[in-house]
Length: 451
Image (cartoon, rainbow, N blue to C red; front, side, top):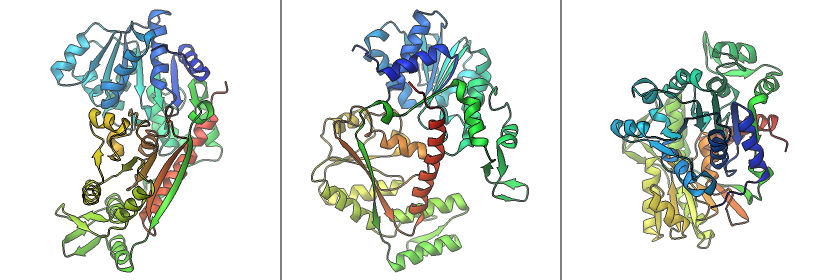
């Protein structure tokens, strides 16, 4: 296929060429893979600035998306690539292959740096989903060992600060080795933040100092290009709505009992929450309609969300619906309800299921954000997504919505429907997602490229 880049794509390609270190904050649907590969091709074959490129990506994206993009475009036909996944023996063979680009999943980056025994003579690296390089992770430590040997680095993400500006430190530490935000997280905190919630010497959260947000944006602006899809594409209208369900008085009593005492007695088993994180998970499960007991068996609480989902599917009048679930018992209960209603459905988990959805063969598809957030094109199959259970992760939330709300969507509107249990943790999660998005939007706006 012939590549006819949009103006914004030409700009982004030129930016990567002119900046040895690039943080590319490109919104979902802007074609960041094609942009990056085009820049790599020019650096390899026109500028002769690099010889060997390492691409680090999520497993599914490394295995399929990057290779598919190389094969898709005519101008990339000369690029030789090797996919470094599979068993250690298969990975070694892939690294020894004669190629220009080596594509590895991020989980295997520590193995590559520490155990492969292969000379790490890469002179350029691309970190796809830069936001996954977080504090003290093995992949971050491994890349920091590799970074001094690289002449060029590109970090790609659509969600750079999904949990606040503290996230940026490690991302930019990987890119510029601490030149802009400092080499040590303690220095970064001291310069831009003040302790927030704490217990003695233990600090649980940090708040930005006055003026610190603009200072951070200014510090990284010289290597950062940011673009939003809505500014450059004819995107469909995005409609976000909430469908509220109401727990009965007795159900709310059970919910409040667990929240207050961290323990719930049920005829089906005892449910305890050992800490705040576990409590959050238990409360989310209860809001969805069931909760795992200490014996790992689901305890039924209510069917309100299942009833709401049934109403939503009926109201779509046969239009395909993508349903995002979070817990395994959500999947089981949704599947049982759809089977009883004789509504054809399928879990999106394989390339074949993706094809069936995109071909219009699946009226209701079930998707888990953690396994299908990145790298999947589902816009051909429908334009409605229903969040049966919510996630605290802004990145997974936005990426999952972007499977439908993206370039190539033929519908004029994309509907994102959230089933919210009133007076439960669902409302807090929705608020948190909104507040995190505001912080992230400030970052994106601060460094947005003006074409």
